[in-house]
Image (cartoon, rainbow, N blue to C red; front, top):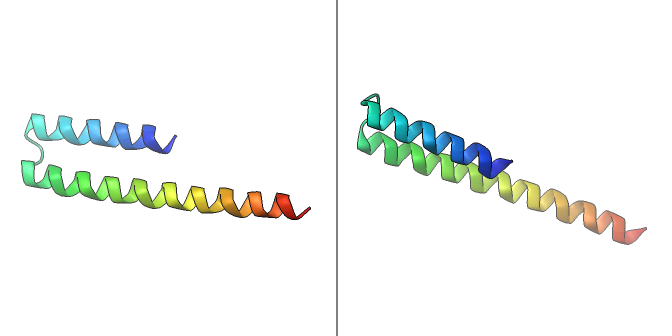
Length: 59
């Protein structure tokens, strides 16, 4: 689901750049921000999964 949101955001950014709503520099900056947010959320999910696995293994 996180990667789908990332893909949709990237497609929207590319469309905006193609339509002339944002510049190429803005596209690169925003793409980087989207990727950083994606990486952050994936890391949070991975940490939550690990925590839950550890809790289950203790029982």
